[in-house]
Image 1 (tube, rainbow, N blue to C red):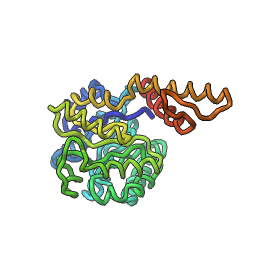
Image 2: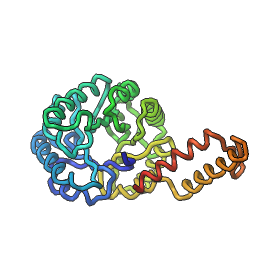
Image 3: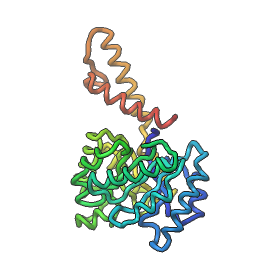
Image 4: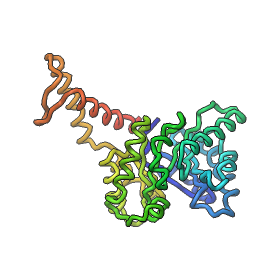
Length: 294
């Protein structure tokens, strides 16, 4: 699976936006049936989301997902019934709070895949953890199903998580350091590679977006949800290994292999220790970089 640096969310009731969506350059498109769509417009949005999937699925460079309403709303079943079709790679499950939530959506997807002749397990689940309960039970949620392909931390300004916890939001994100760290740790323990930050609300603040992306990347995040095409470029810049990083880690591997050939499993590069642990890190970063150019 290609790394997900940017998941561009767009309201599925906007046919004009869905039609142009593959041209925006995001790594993945997320047709939204949740908060960006008025309740009265949700039936229309479901139809348009399915039509967009069926229209764009012939494009190999277009990864398509749908953000569905949470189980608490009672609308998840209708959402899934409308959009499960060939070309849908996964669903973003909002406000996930327990392993039972994941298992219920897994059950719904299995029934629909079987009904429509799709390979069982082919549609992934990417939960958003947007409440104190969701963050607290992160590992249980993220290890509940083999369908899990990513997780999104609900760090958006004035979002559900902020309302639940009551912190004061800042670009630097010190107030969500524990939230981001707990979700990242749980995801890695559950074997999930794609750990993504929440959306950045101010689409006219590129400097703030960059700072927010950098704070998340320093922790180990690999991308974020975005809400406007003008956020794609900066997001990709931050969540792509730099040439300097790639060159350094290539040198780490070359230096270590030369040491092993001499009969040593430890050496130095630029004054820093290089052993098996450092080589493992080097291979991880190089693999990440190579996956982005495939």
